[in-house]
Length: 252
Image (tube, rainbow, N blue to C red):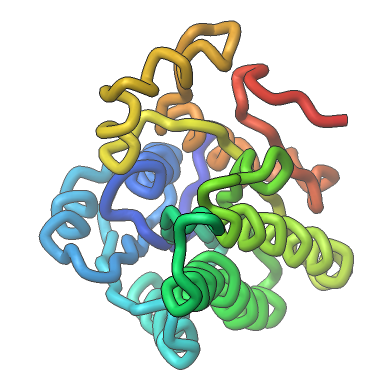
């Protein structure tokens, strides 16, 4: 299904899941704002690889609230409109309680909540306000299985993703009457450059064995779900959390 004359912003789009989402949305005819924090070359490479035209690259440090606003303003100015926003950017840091000092513990929580919860909250605020005044739109958050299963070695990560889920569902209820629809895509392990060291190491086989499929997800599978949620036929799914765990974890 193609979406002519629509535009999307994907945060953290220079690699991994974010890049795959940009590719999938561009393939369906959307014009893309490819967001990056530090790696401009990778973002430019992503934008150059996308089908269609009139794509752009936008930089922002989303741990700084004022840059979330400027990101939305820049993306809207470059693309002329903003119909879909994918809150993908985030971090994962190990900080097991028994092995982490007090100062490092505080810092890990602050960094993780800033990047994974407050950053998406601020992006959602400004993008939703733009969409309310321009016929509506869709905001899709990339969460994690860790929000439900827990992350013993990275509790702030699990907490941030649980908060992202709750925020997205809360705003789905608040903003549906205004034409803004919100969704969560919740993957388990995904084969990306960030996870490659772990998946290729001693834990790799046991991680793949968590799923009866005997593998982890591909970024393109996450992106295909995002592209599906961006289409017109998913309006009644607003507020949904779509699990992509390969049956490695089943929640009621």
